[in-house]
Image 1: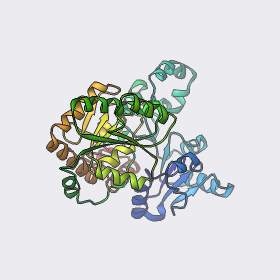
Image 2 (image 1 turned 180 degrees about the vertical axis):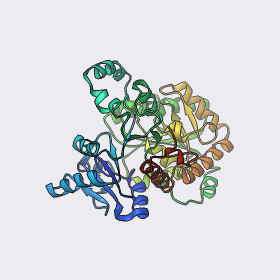
Image 3 (image 1 turned 120 degrees about the vertical axis):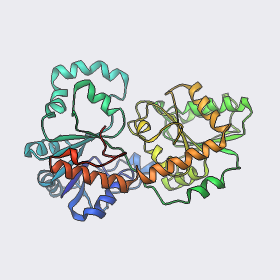
Image 4 (image 1 turned 90 degrees about the vertical axis):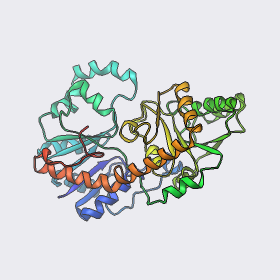
Length: 382
């Protein structure tokens, strides 16, 4: 079986699964990058993954582009990201061979629903999705809300499967990591860009509330962005500079180490967070996550009160209640962190995702989806 994966560029949220596929089928797996890794990503700490052995840089020259088109034409299975070059999609559809599209939610903003009738009328929705109903085209849902968007237009019926981004899950002595910070001051961590839909103001308002309640804690905020100055001003205005610290950017490896030292990970993005790979990383490194209910990965990965806490998106009161519950029950906080690591290492790991994907691909090639024997997690029906 030959598999070709097409996306805009290879990043550290995709390499763990790509590495596993390469281990399993070696040169029968290729990743096609359609554009260079943006400088802004590299400057913010993203590693450069261009030199991976399976990564074909289609944008680099005409020869590579021709090789990419041939792979898309000839491979048994082609998986294409929704943001990739349309020509690759057209070439694959013309072959009549199986195509798997992977996508985050289409309607990341509420106002985009208002334009749905327009797109239905002018044919975009029909051309890009509905017309594929009876073709061998399948959908990997990188987030729980993709299915809702599909239901609005009846797209990919019975051909949608759970997917996402799969960060590395190291074999850790997780009990020791949790025990080591058991009696230490509560540390909370927020890692993101300082932009409006990531809601950096929520940890500050949370700190103001918790300080008034007399809790002893520290919140570290890692990242950069246009709202960083405004956020610092809010910290000063609310007099919480003694318990909230803006760290700035740091390499991903150091972020992981900070997660291991922290008790609680605050994930405050709204519906514009299509997946949210920081959730994977926090759950894989000993944090108890308190996350917004509209983040794409949350319904797939978190189950309250087993593997984390879920608050109502944008609601500071809901966030306060969830965090306060954990601060008052350290044992519950520890149990959630332990359970989160277990589900990440057993179910949502790159190794398990790649194994499940190969099984799904084989069932598609055999035209026998009923043969799938995956119980939970990646590649189960969405």
